[in-house]
Amino acid sequence: MYVCLCHGISDKKIKKLALESGILDIRGIKRCTALGSQCGKCVKQAKEILSDTVQIYSQAS
Ligand code: FES
Image (cartoon, rainbow, N blue to C red; front, top):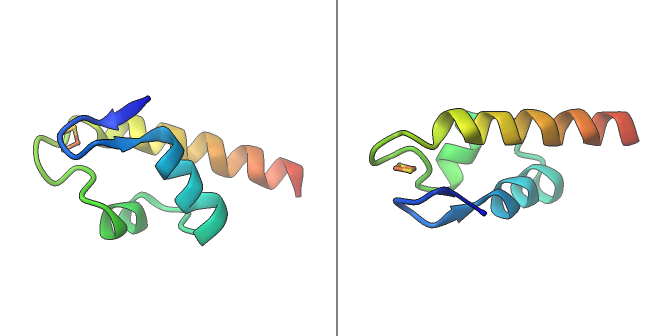
């Protein structure tokens, strides 16, 4: 599913950055991608996905 339609960034990409690259905050995701740099509508949903991913990851480890 696309989270950022302006730049074609999917939820999978956000989860991958969090789990494989250890980027666990929205600022880091924004630094690595163009997320939120155009209309900004995607940032709220991206934060929720990131938060859920971090929570699931921390419960599993
Ligand atoms: S949807 Fe991400 S910047 Fe517009």
